[in-house]
Length: 525
Ligand code: NGO
Image (cartoon, rainbow, N blue to C red; front, top):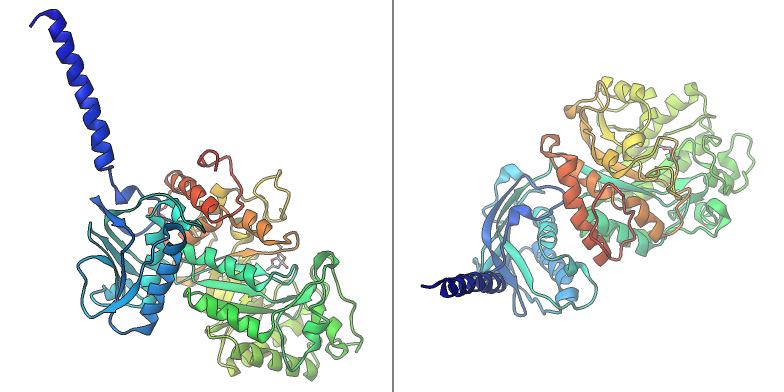
């Protein structure tokens, strides 16, 4: 071969190998389930290297006759239909099909608990196995997250819907993983609450705590005390018109959450934070005079009349009606910042309210101040401000729900340029929100004491769903991961890459999020 021929042959070789690479790519893209950005990070992921193709004609097949599992099948179909435009028929079967998406309750590892699941993807079959429908539901969220981000769009998208093959085995670290929405300072519609619930579901959270009453508004219909809503619900911070949920609307919220395996924890804050009730009924005040409605943002100025039997009749009625609307085991009684209630009145008050809640078959959660009282063995103290109170609760044998303001408050500003929110507990950037361990943050509080974590969104400064989204995203996925993934498996530098890729999902869902400079968000999205 002469020199020229040699050059030609070399060039041909280069060209053909380039073509091969291109052609090869079009044929088969690299697939790696273990590189997918799943939040919260699962316990274990093994990659298979291939793809399952979701296509027109793919069926969702539900094992056996469980009505509940069938509903999860329909929920999955509803999530996947808008963007794909596919029919995605949901069927039942008595045995494992050869192809499709298969949901089953048989063969699960019971050690994974009710929320654990196993997701096995082969080129022909996507199989979700769990001990309970709840676990399958959690696994469905993983399935959503390993599809292209456009799956979350509300209209039909061009594209192929490939799911990488492999296996995910997963279960949560803590049993209580929640967020709180304050609907008292500003009122939010049923639709807004449902959207908020969907955010929690997507990140496998299982509790929505609703702060239903405060100085500025009473938001839940109590039929035996109608002025609470007709008058007490008629305004909000800033003087807007407020609002409230009828019992039917509230039942709709509870049902919607229940279908997402999310328990609603309703809170009626007392004895402080009660101006809306005190304005609605003169007899709840020690001086017998109704208070004016309040639309400012001060705290700690109101109290129920703790020495009056009318107060306990009122509380009994409220808790009775609320308990009847609450399938979950907890009723939150607030108990925070009762600065104008003498401690010698506060203690017997909390003790008696615990008895009322127990008489209606529910368990108490209260902010950490309730540790000043004598806690019932199953009462939960929500740690938000005081290490001393939280430790006192543990000293009485109570369990702790971790919501430390300086780490977990969703109303804290990201930094000093943030326009919405407050900063009394500090600024909470996305890394600070993620980078802590509930079991080591506070001396004296260890893992065995903790039932889980909650991220509260107080709404003195938050007036609509876009503002909610801006404060919640991108911090919420981090709180979800703290609750689900053991601390030893979490690392900010690795997490922030997964979070970045969720930016595209936030956009696909139409979420208005804070583009923290600490995260490399996708461009132009
Ligand atoms: C405190 C206070 C709330 C405020 C919130 C604002 C608790 C438990 N009580 O948290 O009334 O809205 O701070 O961040």
